[in-house]
Image 1 (cartoon, rainbow, N blue to C red):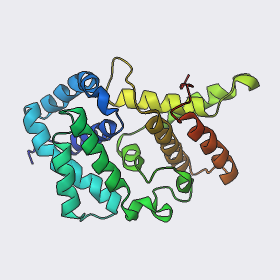
Image 2: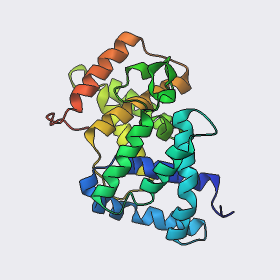
Image 3: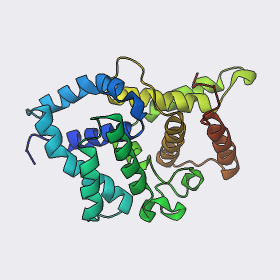
Image 4: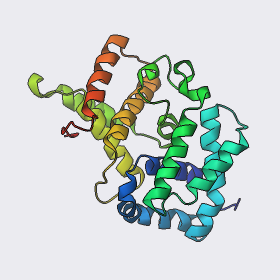
Length: 239
């Protein structure tokens, strides 16, 4: 790999592919417009063309993703190769993106992370997650600013009782974190189910970092509301 492609650029590219995996395939052209400045900037920082940058970085990105989901430094090469194949063309068309997302889902179901007892924050609420660790690696590598989440939660506490929402600040934090990660100038639409489930994962990481855990009873109530809001027939938004 080129010496100009740094560990930081690999980490940022991992977040890019996770965001791609959360995006509606039908919106692929809009997605490409939004990430175009980011892709130009990251390849420029590596002093290579965009094409060469992604050709060099994708194998390492896929190796690390599968490593996380298999919980090993030596992942199964068949899984790595399969992910490389789909990642390399993921943004070419809605069909290619769907194929990539299916591969990411298959990898997320690998038992080394998917089973409740193997999940990232298994003692702090991950057992209640509705999907088998689609989000844990993204939360680790995307450097969320949990001071911002704390500020949002405190602001929510100061609202009048009948307007308070435990979900709203976490969803808003999640959305702003995604937009900030890629310096998006305009809002971008994600699958509601990914926004809601990712918000829960970020909350679990925030709790793990603070060494505080909400009682399981409260987490179950939170998740019940969270899951209800991400149902397709629910018109509520994060505001």
